[in-house]
Image 1: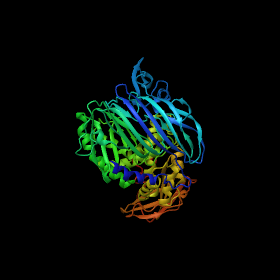
Image 2 (image 1 turned 135 degrees about the horizontal axis):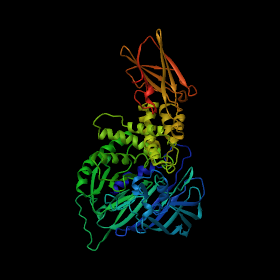
Image 3 (image 1 turned 30 degrees about the vertical axis):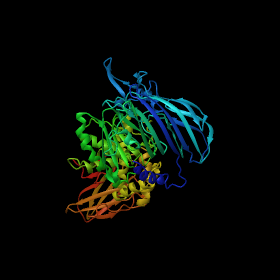
Image 4 (image 1 turned 45 degrees about the vertical axis):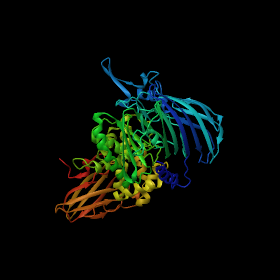
Length: 624
């Protein structure tokens, strides 16, 4: 495995902070952790050392740690949120009848002391000197023994003890499928400090933001347990469990009750692992000799689908490499665990008792997050639509490739339908809403996943599919291993296409303005037909229009959006194309004429890639 580390380590480090924005910087942290897990009590103890580099121009007098486990305690902010929101996550509540009415109860509220999660910190020191700290919910606030000056390093050390909560959300023990340990958000994790300041967000339900760095982690656990997770296993020939080199037999000393697994993960921003004493471990080589590991319960109903899914995972990796950019690490693990599907550095935890299509689908989505979040590390607490939406876009395309539907379909059709449903429902909030601040879970889900996906699909309509494809690849190449923002994807699209797109980013992410264009009137007089269009929604767009004539011919008309200062290349090379004058947003109507032709039909946005909330008025004559 040392050779793998050699070849993967240096390219990653050389690319770190390769962000084209002038003056860009990001913090760096190196973790060393040693952890002992008691699989009977589901409790663990550990030591942590962090070397923190302050790459900012600011002097830091405080730092903050995430203590995610503390969320799984009665009375926590996560518990309070579950009890207050009208549509709580179904996985996190119990539903029962009370006085003839359906009642929902937070599962966290009923946890017993031996079932809760906690993370306790002791002996916190900075460069060997005790630092002052206090715990506020899931955040440890630390007043430093000495300030960290710009461009300086400091070392933090601490001891921690934790208890793995019953599986309620993402992390935990004894999942519904019987997986013993889903160890995610399990360690004291330093909060991110960036150009916006500290991001010491309490753990309430959803998304994350982490500091780039290297993780050196040793996990001691019962010798019958198999572990999969972030990083490269350093001592595979001591561990066995299917990891050892071919032909080498691992012989454990008779008195050994535990094994220590040593992982190293270069240039990631989180570390997760899953473990069980019934895991099957398979490994295949994917594109570029990336080791694809699969760890899943040895259950009869599981085996066939998990075996069939493995070559599909290799196909998915090839698709993402081709359509986004090369996967930069040399291993990826798909691990049964958690409560659905959740992405982590170099791995994912997914529920495994699924139909084959569902198993491939969840793997496609979570694996795609390795590009959109674990290499392009957006602050997903603030810009959740960038990682979830972009991942949904590319994973849906990938699924159409590796597991084609029985009938042809638009890969992102469901995303459009979901968004339009939310927009008409009147419960939409802007995409700039903090992930934890949505009034409804439903609104969060549709906004982050569907409206985020439509952002890219509709961008392809605006600047052309070829330009969108180039934009995605350039975005990945220029911003990998950094923390890109919404403005960064917009600027890349502008540079690729030449179009001005500030209006699009603003309208789609900072407002709930909708798109609604209509054919208002069609009037024929002598040898010409006058067509009047109406903008009924507040969001401006360029328009693609197909006019079909009575002789069977068709013509493409393009109406530029003047805010773009740009014209899209003809998306219909087999049709005559007419570029009309631009339609400025301030004018509610737009009129153009067709000469010497009898019109059979008119269609606005024939490919239905514009998220128009009333498609019925896009067609003439109206459907009866």
